[in-house]
Image (tube, rainbow, N blue to C red):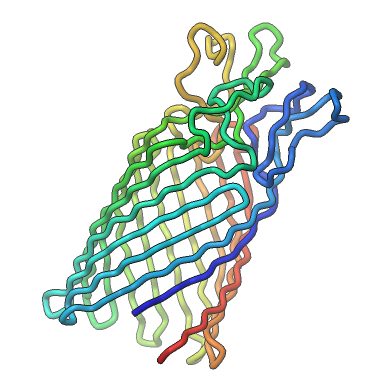
Length: 354
């Protein structure tokens, strides 16, 4: 069985840059859209780094997979993926093998995936913890990084209408793992209203692991209940719990309505800080500079809640669904610790059968 998927999407809005307040210094930060986020007169006039920077980004992705069945109980799946954004590219591949046993009531699966990614040429890569005014190139010229993940899972049919899947996955990342658009603010020791801005710096390696349990049950009226739980931890000090629940209510043979609730809770990365303080000896240009520092709110202690609904239908022209969700994120530190996002998605699937 061969399957392929073409994905195109876009994002607009704003994102915290890591700056505490607007700066009146001659420093500039390029936004993820590739447009300077600084404002001012230009040509030597005053420039401004804003705590919120605008985003305009587009992505095109291609996925392809080839599945083969051997003697009905063994399956292999080989996959390739390519993704291209305005400022980011990713090339990857994966391989999984599955085996059914216990009269096909139990399925064992093992898989591995590899990805090579790099930041594009919109902003390039600058010296980590380097002053924005110096604009020094970084060690990773194209922001290269490599990602390797592997996983094991077991799926068990419990009854005629219920099935559970448990899995363990682990992986590692190597290379440029900082965000070229994020800055960290240094507060002056004497004048607390005086700030300097530096590119953030994260470790060049990261290991991560997770365990998960996924339960599905089909009711007598063909409605489906799905409950998913995951526990995650990594070498940056982040650990998280995720609970995801969905209820698919059938509206006849061709339509359905699916409410969705997701609750997520994570701890902060070891090197997360809302700002650096010169009074604490945290000056990146001082005698004892910090090893790593990031003010990215995604690395903060946080809790997020997602509530939404999906409507789907199928017919002679394929399958279609629309999804709308609202996500509320509550952090503990930083300027923009509380965020809200609205998610709107439309998907149309066409099946070609020979």
